[in-house]
Length: 274
Image (cartoon, rainbow, N blue to C red; front, side):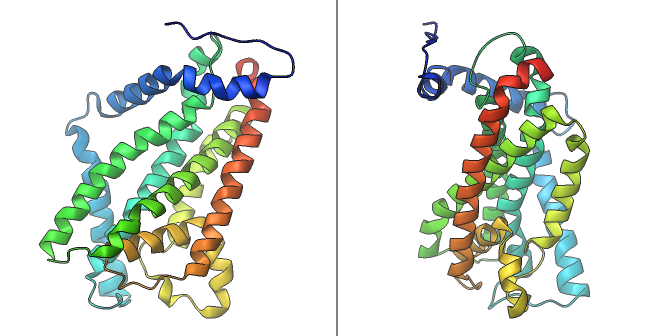
């Protein structure tokens, strides 16, 4: 059935959100297409989603644990400390990179037909979630290797996953809209991702951050997300500052709200500018 397009004075906003549901099949199609394209004609295919985080875990474990001699909380193996952080960080970084280029990559589609453009960056986030699930499988293998299985804390993991989704989606909306208007942002996004990796607690524990810098440090919304993942997966043996988690929740809500506002504001110009 072809979706019905309603043009009605004063009702554009309401009809737009209805159109998101009417065009849900396009959302599925774009997400599935991106998944196929990502691994098409690659030598080892889906294994790239395992190799990248695994090598990062090895490097960070050697650098921070063996060379810098940073401790891991409790009885947590340092490799698991890093891997638990790589789960949300890689999801966020991949979503950011894919979302920022999503509108440009679908320029022909956007300039020819109508559909809610919000579907495009949202599809990129879902595509990145596939990599997350593969990396989660690697995390399970490492936990079996170290015989460090999760306990009841893991039941709160979905809440932190939703927080990671929000951070990825909100930041992705800002960057994809800005990238259409200012093409220089395609060069800035890799820098943001690289810089964010070092100011986020991926290779180290948040416990080593001095108390006087804790508030400034927690203004990074991924701090609460990463610490929450570690706390959920590693039996609660890693410190979790609930005030930082609440701050991350507020920042993510603001990021998603402002991202939707700016995206909708710029959306009417996409077909002309792109």
